Length: 231
Ligand SMILES: Nc1nc2c(ncn2[C@@H]2O[C@H](COP(=O)(O)OP(=O)(O)O)[C@@H](O)[C@H]2O)c(=O)[nH]1
Ligand SMILES: [Mg+2]
Image (cartoon, rainbow, N blue to C red; front, side):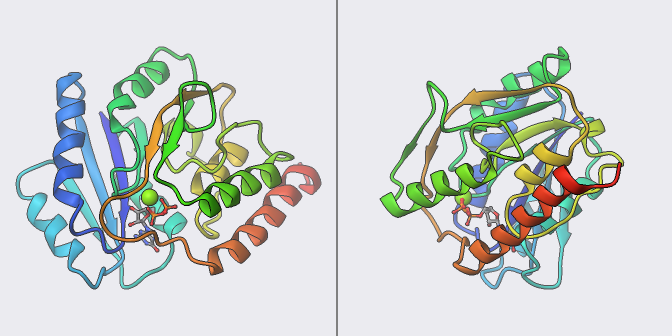
């Protein structure tokens, strides 16, 4: 079974289409899939909508008390999920969930234990992003170069075998759970698959200025884990 983890905060408009697209794609590829939606008590009622959608589809909804952060939401999603293969994606349909079957196949065949949806390799791209977002993203990636070779280390769209995180010491600082896993996860092979990121049409980005400070704290932790950890 595969588990698709989706963290949500105020994603009411996009959620029904996301859910139907994910089950269309996975069903079409003959994959047995569940979704885990982790909602932080969204004021717009996303959590209630998720509960309704869960009456019809194999969806587990994790309700948290308030906005506790993206990385910790995804980690709670991991705990509530049952699949051997786990996919993480945004609720806003920015990620091309059409490549999920390809990601799963690579992991099933043992070609990699971590497969990253990548905007910055040949065939990938970004549509409708303000220039400033692009610059921040590239800058953040440059800063991560000392801890990971993943080209799109800021990707929020990735698939992993559960063994990658089983027993890994993950911390939940900030926004970039992918980076945390690329650095600290237990795997020997990582692959990137290109996709074109399309900026959200509904709702707003939750990436705030405060997350940049969190990111610097996160980097500090990752660098010291990688280079100064007592092994
Ligand atoms: N549960 C939860 N979800 C969050 C939080 N912050 C962001 N998200 C969700 O995480 C995903 C990524 O956020 P998004 O605003 O799309 O960030 P961007 O793609 O970097 O602009 C979306 O599905 C958001 O609804 C949070 O604090 N808690
Ligand atoms: Mg997004």
